[in-house]
Image (tube, rainbow, N blue to C red):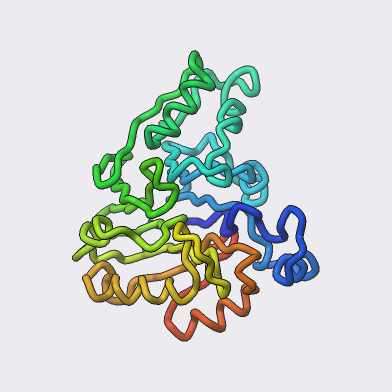
Length: 268
């Protein structure tokens, strides 16, 4: 399996909408891996995760198209992950398609929003619940509960194919015990985990900082959630975390952890 990170930024993006931080200004001046669009990913070229407002420029940048998707999975309904207005552009009269060509998998809050906004539109929507697996082609997908936007069933996703497993976990917070219990013995071969707060921890419990990232990795190893040699990558970085890409690498690489960026691919 190969996961492509289309966007590795948090809600504000980097450079941020109104700039004003050292990290945002650095990205504005230097570009490259320090430029981060809102988070989303693509598994093996056809399973899309989240639909941020930056989706169209991400597809244009990487020479991709939604016509190749077989499924669209949503983690939760925050605006930087769920931009429902983009869905309409995959259907007539905005193009010549009479159906989207992919199935939408989402929690109850997102399902209700989409059906309320597009009640008569031809969209195939499947309700997802944490810890209840489902199939997409020959993949087994299991949502696990994130400690983020807890008024709804927010997800992180485990993908499994041919005995290989990868967890895409953005907007996690420090997981609740039910999630830690579920991950015991998971033996994951790949992990993409958020590091929104970087070097500036905040009281907010819905995201983690760099030190909490290491703490979570340590606990995952203790409970057998990570296989030996598992590929670990960061994502969902905020400019408020006061960390450039190079500074994040200086912190994480000695721990055997890769720093995600827009366009990075992770294969397991």
